[in-house]
Length: 228
Image (cartoon, rainbow, N blue to C red; front, side):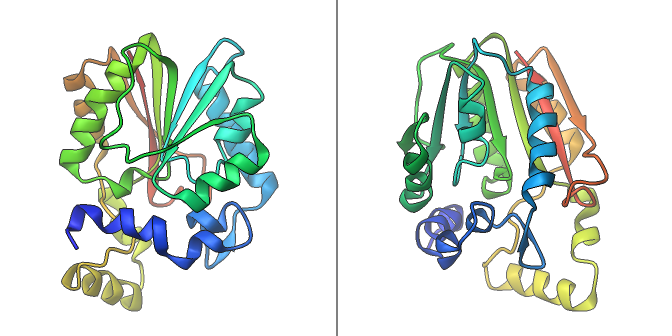
């Protein structure tokens, strides 16, 4: 299997996608325990505020997974489109309704210029290589309306990699994953890379953001916001 298709196969076939809760299905857990609903509501409120979500927005959720962002956003935006490569995960969104779901690889899909006012990619950038990220940024910039906002959330911070792999056992597992080409997290990025990529792509404003300390991944992840 080619490295850049590892996560494609994972999110189509791994048994994690059949777990009980919407957060378990996408691996948003701590020691196997999914994030609590009340904690996730705080994340959503912060995300809505940062993205300036409103009833006139047409939102694209890239790598939408089980819809933990798409579904609540659909109640506050004019429209929400959810793209993902996993049929079982998109089926979870379809059960609820109110969201246009598209089964597609984000690296390959195309939309017309200026279709969306907001784009969110949360807890998924680690599945894209640096090259794929550069290419995807160019596409997302085109898909946004002037003044539109792109929000990338839960980015693995390369500078804090060993805040996650913080024990001898975890570090051994990390190095084995490199040796065996079976990544545990995926790709890691620096804040500088994200900000400079945003500027290179053409965004007028590019900023990396600390996550509040109460977020479950705040010790090793960050967010980034870009304005076209």
